[in-house]
Length: 367
Image (cartoon, rainbow, N blue to C red):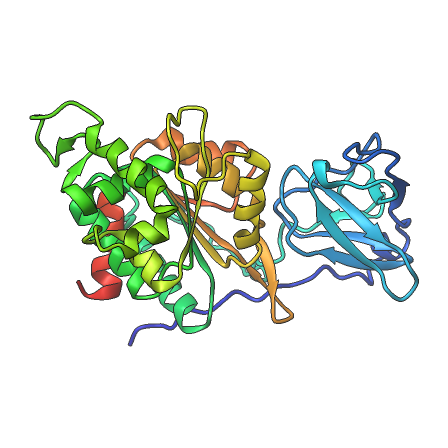
């Protein structure tokens, strides 16, 4: 009988220990100018972090990289907010201090989801991941996780690179995943959406018939972007009936939001594209705050940006649980880049992302 997926139990630190009881309150310094942090600010990580305020240890929900902690120390109402540097306001009380062991009223808890230690075997063969590991287990884990998320009102965010839009089979797979409820939000660039709409409208992709080299232009690609602009936006263009299939059409029809962030390479974008990077970050973060699982495919810059703003945990309905992260790319360098930047909880899968989404869809949608 198949074992049901279970979320690991979160274990908070034992704050009755002397090191926590005797630890000082965190030092708070007020911001003097909007957007300027005090010196010696404490930069947060993706792990659960606690701050001692008025002798109470307070968990920073949604701790994430490249942010600071703004504390509220009104007696009886102690809390903390996680704030990007640019969003700091004069008068905000920022936690300062660089140690993470509790000695400055700051404690980073990296073992919250680890099971209690059991007696280890004196010898274990292939107990870790290696080139000989059967990575098919990763797929089994994803299948179980996504089924659990769908059944328990989880929030699944996908990052899609252009590669997933360049093939009819992977586009069809993405469409089925949207329709089946396995995607709640998508982050991507202009090209991923434009290529999907081009195939859905003309049957060509970035100027050439699929798999053929009989064309070498961007005619249809820009024709689609022009048509979307003329229609006033992606939703209006899809509802015009010109798009036959694809994940973008499925998103419009099923209320799944696509956050499109522009890049310096874009020659023409959609009315729906966020061309201000701060606005794009804010739009992405609005979904990240609700995300319980995020899957990042073949888009290294989006992966790093999203991974760094995604905490390793979150609190839903009063329960602290992990946020699951997967990075998928054909290049080992690409999937490891996020870990190099400090997001240590992401699991990496090195494979063709077109095959990856097709395999996920075949299992979950029986397509």
